[in-house]
Amino acid sequence: MPELPEVETVRRGLEKLIVGKTIKNVHHDTEKSFPNDPVVVSEFLVGAKVVSVGRRAKVLLIDMDSDYTLMVHLKMTGQLVFVGEERFGAGHPNESLVGSLPDKSTRVTIMFEDGSHLYFNDQRKFGWMKLLPTSLVVEEPFMKKVGPEPLDVSFTDIIFIQRIRKRANTSIKAALLDQTVLAGVGNIYADESLWGARIHPEEMVKDIDDKRLKKLHHELLYVLKLSIEKGGSTDRNYVNAEGKKGSYIDFARVFRREKLPCPRCGTVIEKSKVAGRGTHTCPKCQHASA
Image 1 (tube, helix red, strand yellow):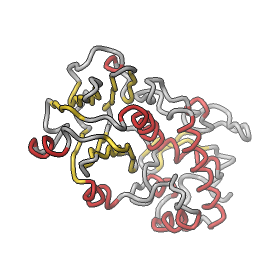
Image 2 (cartoon, rainbow, N blue to C red; image 1 turned 60 degrees about the vertical axis):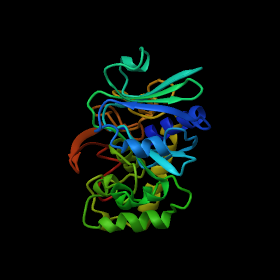
Image 3 (cartoon, rainbow, N blue to C red; image 1 turned 90 degrees about the horizontal axis):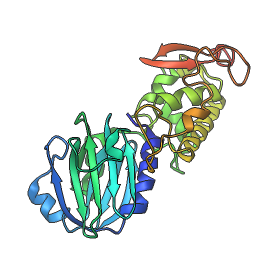
């Protein structure tokens, strides 16, 4: 599943291409991917102009001048492909990114008045596009429980520490991965930020002082911003808004570097399982008593 930087990369790509366009028509092949009332679609999506493309955690938010929002979650194999004067694909890197569309994986086709199209393709049908009043987006169960955005300017060291300490009796990695604590942080960025802060992933939150948590916050911001700059991280099933694989993974310090030397001290990186996820650590730099 794409993490925050990948979805933010997609958001930025869509923002450049579809804002200001008016939707002429919409087709879909399954209600699972497009669970919307046809009457609502006809009244509030068809004929509406795209005014902005936002993001909350890993969900894209396409706002219309009809005061409705199209929420999009790509899940595991979803992709968005825009075809107009230029073309880009974002998401699962199969032939649909460059092939003729719609194809057998196309779940939703959005046609704009200028003749361009936005295709939502999803092989496994886990992703979805949900249309609802913009004012009700915050009332969606997911939106109500998800934590703050780590890249928001208002998300200070103090707030980060307060949020993390809500999980005082869990490992620090489990706290970072908890989407109710903060939004959009996944396995890659948890490992990378913990390595940067010299904190062992299994260390209990209650045993980490504020100074080290502040350092962790700064490292998390660093790796998230770097990943967005590099176009995302996933090198197996995700590409950026220009249809190119994200390059952050090439600059990772610890993630997927097991059996290789730590770039900071030279000790061999180890892989274990923490919080149910494959976890990469330097046994010297990240000793629990550091």
